[in-house]
Image (cartoon, rainbow, N blue to C red; front, side, top):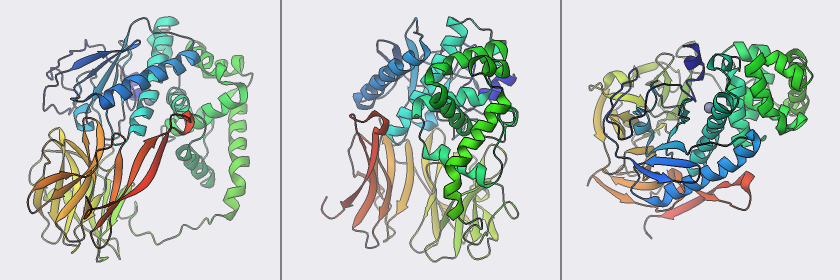
Length: 481
Ligand SMILES: [Zn+2]
């Protein structure tokens, strides 16, 4: 169904009944299933939250934020839920990928999903509270979109196909992030610099233009120019009569005129900045679509400067890890091939690159394997897997960093939905907890003498809702602990 394909990244529509204490009865395409989840239910005024966390800290925060988002979105949509809305919270991304609540397969890049008929929001805990909160706010916009369109306005599913994806996703981003976002700004600058800024028509029809970022920019312009109160009426009218007629009747412009206004607005804002920036990209390009895939990500240079490990695309849906010579970019080998077992579900390339041993002989990276994360260590010269490390009690981990003496690895591990730093001793095969904060501790790095670890620590600023999450940099002296 086109409708499913169109919305699959962030929302998937199914008509199956949700099996609450689900053993995987239904397998989506390639969907792994490794364990049974025993759900508990937390009732809130507008939500029932299904989870299997052993600890209430994240759950209480999540539940309260869901109610706060509800209050915000309810004002915008002028709509209420008649029943408590189900929220299904998985403790890790690898477990979320096994969900039976929706039928489509979920990749490493899917942050959450909302399905239409029961308005279920399904999402995992992540390595920072800020990210969980954003996904929750975003998915709850979808829950309100579905509720308003399908139940309150009783619009037929077929008519909802009139709504372009940029409007659905752009709205979810605008109402969960606000109008200022460095990520969206970066995309808009890039489009302008490359003379590839889409018209609204192009954006609606050509999937090359990422609907989340362009949609966010366009909806922010509409909201800031004509007022946020027209956004939901525009959504409903677009479903009823199509985008062009809806724009004409609500804003008084056709999409061509609005496209020109959008582009002019972006141009006049960014042009002064573009004057000073160089069009010639700095650096010597060594790995590109000419000798590798189109997406080449998370490069990591070996300490001796000889090798680069990086992710590149295997096909449209997944990536492989490659090793190349740093000077020439010549690919030495595809790392995936040297792994004997075929039980890697995916590489963790979004949160985590990898880490080199201090002697540049080994490279470690994180894989999703049988429902949890493991660290795989390969011997670069022999092209062999040297070790696979599963950490007891820590199913989700990211950003491993090898210590300068080669004995330890520090990483961010997710336990009960909260990301803290852990130290793994590769000689004794023991794990030590380094931080025990409620907010996340991420991106650890070693001092060259191995005595200190510097990391980014999250905190929350309740008084300033639009700048709610802050990240500070902290240093931990290992000898003083
Ligand atoms: Zn979405």
